[in-house]
Image (tube, rainbow, N blue to C red; front, side):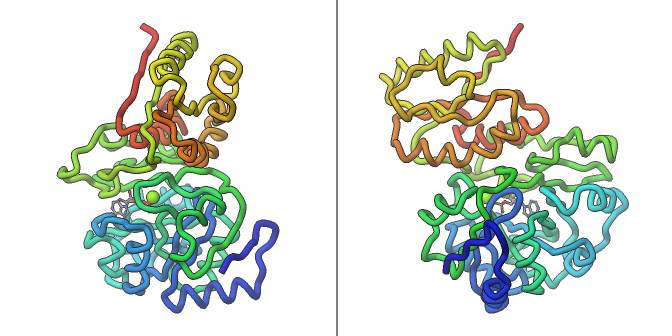
Length: 349
Ligand code: AMP
Ligand code: MG
């Protein structure tokens, strides 16, 4: 069933949706980051359906979504001072913390790890569904595994309709990128996946913060990593992609033009608003991802833009990159995987 709660949550429909969750069915719902495909986290059969619907590798654990902080102790234990400080400062919000798990969480959720990823979404629809279902909800991003995350219902329906029992439409998601994932190791928060909550913001609260070396690196599929999700091809459309970031704007335009020529115009450019008039491609083949200094806007648009570009089936999607700072780190972490590290970077010397 499809429900539109973009303007307001319908309480009768909310009851239906929560019953589906309690009965072990899958529901797609919005959060402030991206859409999630959710199931009762305490029901291993229900969680199993998520892996099937997404085609997700079973060694990639899921994030458990809770309605409020008081629920954390029901699923996690031995919370340290630093972990508590992170919880107090960044939750609810686009922030996921890895904690020691309690046995109530089935192995299928954590891929057998002794930790569990916890998030408290700050979105009225997500909160309503979790609260009234009365159970923690395991919910990865609503997309076929490896594809860009779903940030609007139109694109998600194309991909997942028929694979879930209900789809709740809450409009385009506010942030557009998945949560920041943090694990505290030896009292230091380590960012396993960058997101809207930036290293700089965490540093202000805690002091020292580390960024896992795999956040920007190319990872071998057979290596052991802190966060299993890091290993997989991700956020990737069917078409090949190339990421270009030159500090100097003239260089940036030069490279874009060079590749447009090299591929004889059979490209789609995901570019900044400011470059729309400077880049010549055929009608509809320049997709504006936002203003070059507005990382919030770029984050919000990037996954939809990738899907839109893919529909045109170009030989190459050329993507304009940004500085790996603040929210730029999260955007570039996703885009490097999108492009499978086909990346050109030119810094001013
Ligand atoms: P997604 O559900 O697609 O947003 O991805 C969730 C991310 O969190 C993946 O990269 C997972 O590998 C990571 N994750 C989930 N649980 C854990 C855990 N217990 N330890 C480390 N990383 C985790
Ligand atoms: Mg995902």
